Image (tube, rainbow, N blue to C red; front, side, top):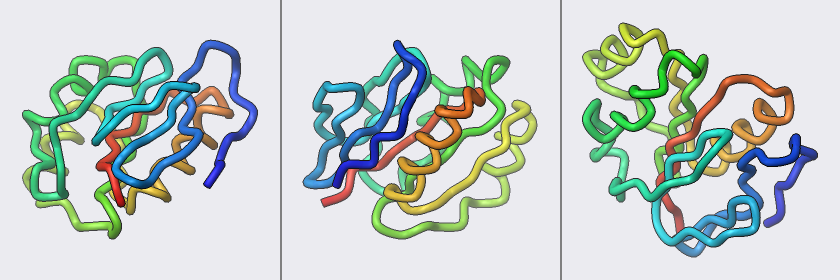
Length: 125
C-alpha cells in the first residue's frame, strides 16, 4: 500500500508498511521503527506492551523539538497506562496512540504540513 504524500525534500516519509517492515524515504526497515524528520532508527518494541518511557527515550531526548508523538501500537490502538501518558505530558509531548497504519498516515500528513512530529511505529504483518 503506497501512502506517499508530497513531503519537503530531505524529510523522512513512510511510503509503505506491512509484512513486518516499513519503507521510509526509499529505505526498507525490518521491524519496528522510530521516525523523525531527520532520521529513522530501529525500535526494539514488538507489541504495545513494550511501549514504556524507557523505550521512548530516544524521542524524549528530542522533546524540545517535537509537539506530537504518534504511537503506532500494531494492528489495533490501545489505551496507554495513565502513568505513561502523564510522564510523556510532563516532557511536553502530546501523544496519540492508534493502530500502526493510522499512525503512519497521520505522521505523513503532519510532516507534509511541516509540523514537529515523530512516530513510534510497531511493525505489522
